[in-house]
Length: 344
Image 1 (cartoon, rainbow, N blue to C red):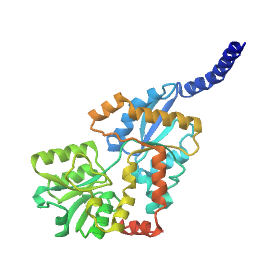
Image 2: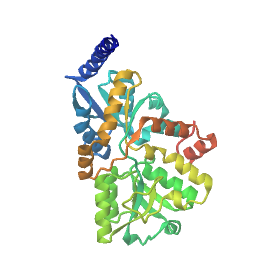
Image 3: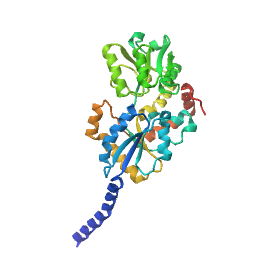
Image 4: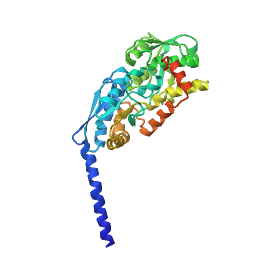
């Protein structure tokens, strides 16, 4: 009798579970999932978005078709606003956003155009973390960080509000360097070409992409380029002898300001869902994201593309944001002041 009751319970349990499994499989079957990349085709963020798109579909029940849709504009604000406000909130649109969007409201920059709340995005996670580098042409005669205090050092930069210029201004104020960003270069490719031609002494990147690292490797092998400093919480393993600014800044509050700024680099290459996407779809996609990031085939292809994978989960990202936005007001104001962004 007991055996019959147990078997009956198992049958009832299976009957209850089966529809849920079927529902999860059926939801995405035949659908298209769009990864909205905030960068143009061929950029560093786009490289990771396309890599993810080629693999995540097989980890989503129902195996939907995954398509990358490029939506560059306003340093990623256009894509972020779209995912938050306009994209269908049905779990078929994933935002591949630049790291800077995570701290955009903390900087107080162009707040009127930021039609999203970073805490209301549903974060899937990140596939990388960034470390910027200060690379110089060896013709400049610059050998170490102390040399950056001795004379004006010109750097190629995109714009006043880009990391190329903001980090330079912060480093000047905190360390006493004499970096002079020359703005107007269209992206890192043009900026690195200016270094190669010795139009400027060097280039300070916000992060490192495969093309940029390949260029630096060629210069280092030829003896024409040198990485002097790294701008991030952790040293890039490819440049073990180049210290980070955290290593050399002695002022405790100065280090704390840079650590706050580098939160976005630790967040790296984040992926988000809109604020109204249902919990069931969020759970499915978050699980698929994490499984993809650990998949041997995915990791092998990433390695072949010189795209290092560093998985950061949603809980960790949310904790990092909470810590950053909860920083002492004086520190946030100092960051805004040094980055030359008007405080509100």
